[in-house]
Length: 468
Image (cartoon, rainbow, N blue to C red):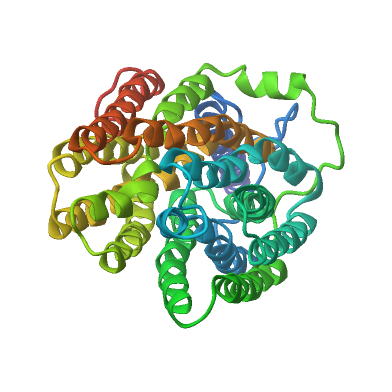
């Protein structure tokens, strides 16, 4: 009996010991899992927050969850696509207007003077982002898109009854582009708030809307200019844009909660520039955007100078924008896999090399069309991946201010780049003038690429093959 009692006690003791050990092991496992999870999250914060803590709220260690999908997210992508179709897509048709004004209402003015219409459109579209980005962070996209729709359509309708240079300049180059800017920035920034891992791909899809617009609007404009008046052509385009932007008004939302009104002051801008990576990215992009849009403005005029029929030459704008559709989607997919900076650099260098190696010697419609198709693809890469690279080194809660600021700076590059090219071309009656303009474009783009190489190597800690 004593033996049985001792055995029972021993068994009980062993069970208690096993139970205690099991609890200890379970507790250690839970601690390990918790510690591992915390370590992982900590590593995510460390990796993403070095440039600007995009994964956390400012002044807080709380992780902000980004959906990376869902009905609202994809509805926003669809609406933003239509928003850029009607806003930036309209401005992408500037090459058609450049040549039309030279032979119609503004035939007495120089090419450089007329080019201010194109350059001001791009300038206000981009520069306005400096203020619109802050308004987006404060109020969200709803009222911005509504205001932008009203202002853009009003500007286009007023352009339809304009006859003099200054009337066209005010309506088409100032009022309408400012309206376009509200829609463009609100749609682009809203899409960015819903995605992280797929951000480059999504931004590519959204910005491809502008390429579709640049493909469609030149065809629409040419068709209606042949069958009706300039005034009614502009009004029809205004109605089409109004219909497209209605979709954006209904569907586009932001995943960021509006912060409420805060005055935009220099300290806010200074804080954005208090990031060396941001400064280098902005400087490099300034040189690139000094020239990247010039082929869109002058490819038609260049083709006409080399003996191409004007009607045939106008299709080159559609070729540029048509190939740009794929250049804004495919590199976006690749950028999420191989690195956004890496794909951005590839796009920049190929744009510069193609301009020097292919556009300069091209003197026939076939060669110019080949250049337009390839350049359009890689210029789409450049335009698409800039906001993705900026988002990568910025706080997601301040994404509107960061992306708006970099667009504001490069707006000045776009403002001066096209008129500089126009001044180089002068009257456009000599081959040397066109060659010099193309050489300027190619060298400015390559210069920006070389500066960006430095930024990329610094971020990757000098690792050449790193995904970044």
